[in-house]
Amino acid sequence: MGVAEKFEIQVPDPLAITSTLHDIVASGDRLIGSLFRERIRKPVRVPEWLGDELGIGRAFGEATLRLWRDPLKLLDRQTALWVDSLDLWARTCSALSGTRVSPIIQPERGDRRFKDEAWTEFAVFDHIKQSYLLSARWLLETMKGVEDIDEQHARKVEFYTRQLIDALAPTNFALTNPEALREIFRTGGESLLRGLRNLMRDIERGKGRLSIRMTDLDAFTLGDNIATTPGSVVFQNDMMQLIQYAPLGDTVRRRPLLIVPPWINKFYILDLRDKNSFIRWAVAQGNTVFVISWVNPDASYAARGFDDYLEHGITAALQAIERATGEREVNAVGYCLGGTLLSASTAWYAAGDHQPIASTTLFTTMLDFARPGELEVFIDDQQLDAIERRMQKQGYLDGAEMASTFNMLRANDLIWSFAVNNYLLGKDPFPFDLLYWNSDSTRMPAAMHSFYLRNMYQHNRLREPGGITLCGRPIDLRQVRTPVYFLSAVEDHIAPWKSTYAGTRLFGGPVRFVLGGSGHIAGVINPPAAKKYGYLTSPRLELDADEWLATATQTAGSWWPDWDAWLDQQDATRVPARHAGDGALAVLEPAPGSYVKRRLAR
Image (tube, rainbow, N blue to C red):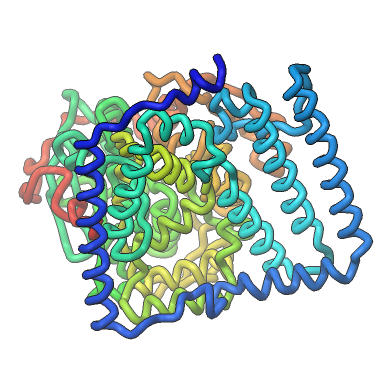
């Protein structure tokens, strides 16, 4: 198919253009008005990057100085790029004359930016693609190759160089993106107007700050078509609601199952749809499932810290479960930061006279923060001081800031792909339950967030016996003698699996480590019916991570049945099924409860 057929021009619909222009003007008027009013109420604030509160300027300044101290090495790098560029130009000329040539460089496996066939079918676009990839490789290798640079500065230089490279990809610009060009020709330019309308709406929604929509935010309603597993709120305080789910059989395990989600996300990642709900599946396996639904805090929670989440979160939940079921012991699951909180709580109980947590399951949870992955680039005194100054002013860290940080770790997938779809192609984002949850961010109390960043990420005190004191009691994970099940994900960019693996050596009891496929979310939300990914197991936890991987056995499909079999070993006794309201706790409202429905402005 030739260029003419690929880029056939269509006459746009004048009514559609008029409607789109009207939306753009209306959005612009609202945005200008709101920003004007905001500037009147508040003084103009100098952007963080201008004051270099993140230390980016200092890092690149040091890297540049080190580069110029070895001009011959820099000249060698520049010469290598020049030779590659000449080779690429010669091959492009041959391709333009009809000769088949092999590429100099190919996109990395999994890079979906260049999946459109035009990137290989047309010599001009193929040249643009390869020229970008060569330049990107040269720049990254050059900056990574800087010697004698501060280690933290080196991490910042590499991370933000990647951000720059991703931002400058030809796919992010209309004139160098064949898919965008094709859409412009097909719609007679209407796609660009729709993209501008989407851009204006996203800036307006972010109150002057670009807030890219990843999904249709009106496509889902909690309790209606997402988070629909039947259950009831049976307890609440100012920190959380406790949900008890209705049984799906006549008998259940004797010990109830308590799920502790991270306080930086909402719990319904574990209850998206019937087909991928871990909560529904756990209920179906014969568990009396209780889930903590954390409050979405405001400025009044500024002083709430780790102790509050232990005392008024996990401890309050355990006491409520005992009142509801009569059981003094539970099996517990913690996800990500919820797993860190759960582990610390288990150690806190181990230092006392009663251990109500009889078994612990940790989903993608770090306990040893020596190597926290790419998040380490954000952890130093300068950046933490800046975060704490912002939190002191408003009492919390806004959920959008944390979401932006996580999105930067996978910028091409979680930022630029949506910018291309929404703005260059002029399309509305597709309804997707996972991305709806991802956009439903929560705030973090200032005291809690500061404690976590300082004690875990910066100083790595949780792994030290007595390194952290909670509610007046020093804790030691080695005192935990109850069984622990670790589930990690091989492609996890938030809790790297080798870092989570290091946590297996911190407990004093039996530990099972399972390495699932995919990443931080898909590796956990992997129902058996999907028949995806597979998982690795090995009892050789005395080995280092690479050696463990070499000895591990691959099993096809979901890890969920493996966990259920492990749980049976801990708790095989069955009792009659329990229903909300049967015990001492009355039903307060239907699941998913009111706390989870408190959204930030969107």
